[in-house]
Length: 175
Image 1: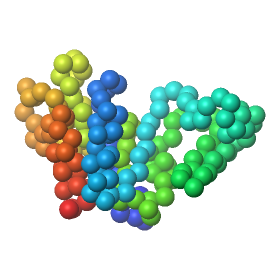
Image 2: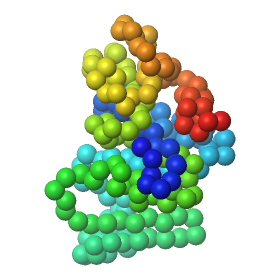
Image 3: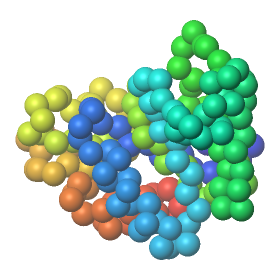
């Protein structure tokens, strides 16, 4: 998936809950940032969530009825938008909301049912079936154990974030 009118690569990490998507991303982000890359993140949440805390002005203003609250400082800004939808937003809608002009790569956690390039995180010990045989948008599998089924995709070591970072840079940034 590419942004409309731009060529910023979008790469997802798909796995069942508890597989370690966030844990891997927390290790990958500094490795990619260390290469001078500007990374955007989109994370799917399966439930209602808050990014601000009760007692903070932004929280109180949003809870009081503001449909949009933008909080800004010298170091960061965040936009919270309230509103009920029939369905979860699609990934392409969210990608279009990120300021891609300032990014080299957008990483996505979740959205495993949408068709865009993804690395599947697979831990056989968890007992879930692999997704890669049915999902043609999976471009690699990162596993913590050897796989029993033959895989034609690149196989990455889930316990070696530097090698996963190397794969991402080579495959998606051509460096």
